[in-house]
Length: 210
Image (tube, rainbow, N blue to C red; front, side):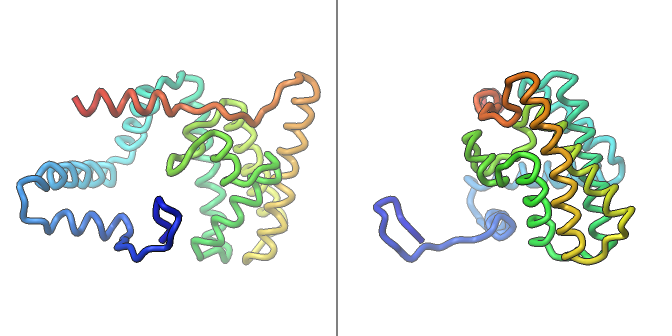
C-alpha cells in the first residue's frame, strides 16, 4: 500500500470483522475495554432483532445528539423507508450482488445531483461517514424522490435483472434531477452543498470518551 512517504510498502491489513475477531483473541488486560464494548454492541443488536423499534429509537437519539432537528430526523427516517422499499424491490427482481446495489445507487445519485456518491462525500469533506447523515433536508428529499421514482417506474415496467433496472435508475434519478434544477432556478440556491455535521460528531465522541 502507499505509505505516508508516497512509496509502496508491504502492509498488514484486515477487514473490520477480522480485526474485531483478533481483538477478541488478544489475552491482554488492555484489550478488555474493547471486548466489553463488543459484548455490549452485540447485546444491543440482539435486542434490536427481537424489537426493531429499539434500533429506530437508538438512531433517533444518535441524530439528536448530533444536533439534528426533529424535522430533519423525520425526513431521514422517511428516506430510510424509501430506500429499503427500493432495495427490497431490487433484491426480489434479480439484483443479488453487492456491487450491483452500489452501481444502481450511484446512477440514481448522479442523475439527481450531478455528482457521484464519492464526489458528493468529497464535497462535504467526508471519508467513512454515512453521506445521508450529513445531508440537508433538501438533499434528503431529492434523494428520496429519486429512489421513490425509480421504484415506482420499476414496478410499472416490471424491471427484472440488472440491465432493465439500470435503465430505470437513470429515469428515476432524472425525475428528481429535473425537480432540483427547477427549484434552484426559482430560488437561486444550490441544493447540493458542502455542509456537514463533522464538528458535532467530534463533540459527541469527545463527551463519550470522558
